[in-house]
Image (tube, rainbow, N blue to C red; front, top):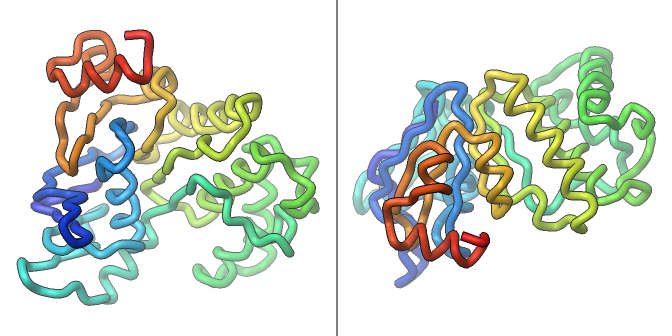
Length: 251
């Protein structure tokens, strides 16, 4: 479903991704862990076309998202635009339109981008907001919602585009501790109740251990170690992984 081949990205002397080879199978739930600055979020931003790789090939659901030859320049193509629609993302910050209700926030992209009939978009938004437990808040604007509720609206908004791939970039990092659980529960239900491919950057190690098919440890722009959660969290093979887990867990 997702394939990176020889993907590199640098800002000056800072090599964020180094000839990355990385794949995610259809329906697989993969969590990416690692220290800050290791390149985790850059992977997601490249998949969202928010960042351009310096070189390499990125394919999503059989379509070419990026194909940048060494020394060349990326060009926007019709295939890129079509492929990009396969991907939805939930960011650290909620990025909701403050002047719109929860319902309007979820309806906006299907109407404007997918050209859905407003009645169909309305029905889809009501269903999705119900799925994330916000049926009683359809007409509330973001200012009347808690951080956890806003993030749940953001999840419904991403789902409204019916992506085949969902990306989560530390979706609980901006939340107060008591609100984290409600967002994780929604993501847990998506992970266990759908066949959607999911790629999640997170510092919630126990959650990653619970929902992942595979965990990937990143450091300095490369994959240090990857494997089933039991292997990575219980018996990691690489010293860098062990050091990282000791820092974030009682390991």
